[in-house]
Image (cartoon, rainbow, N blue to C red):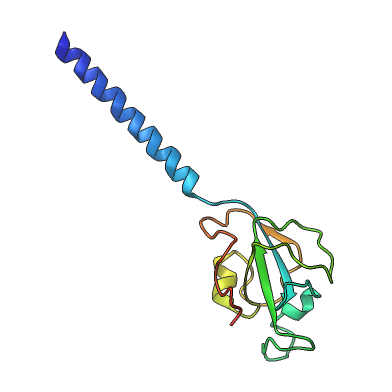
Length: 135
């Protein structure tokens, strides 16, 4: 009888550990929706056309008043107006960085609308991030 209790105990412990591991893995996935905005080097939102690398400017990133970046964060919601400063805590990357755009589920080239929200941006986080120095 003692052996039977041990077996049951081991089975319950194994089940608990599997459930706990699954829960920890789920908590580790940062799948919060992220908001994306076109902004200048100071985080002031500019017209999204400034972050369109298909406009024939050669993708220099230095247009009138540039350089421009795509800022992103789970803290950013849609609806911020052109001219307003984005809240602290986001990260940025060069608007013409096609690899990073694709990584975030954005089109690799072209226009990214201000206030675009992407869900399922898993494990990419909002603070720090890729190219936060802006390059």
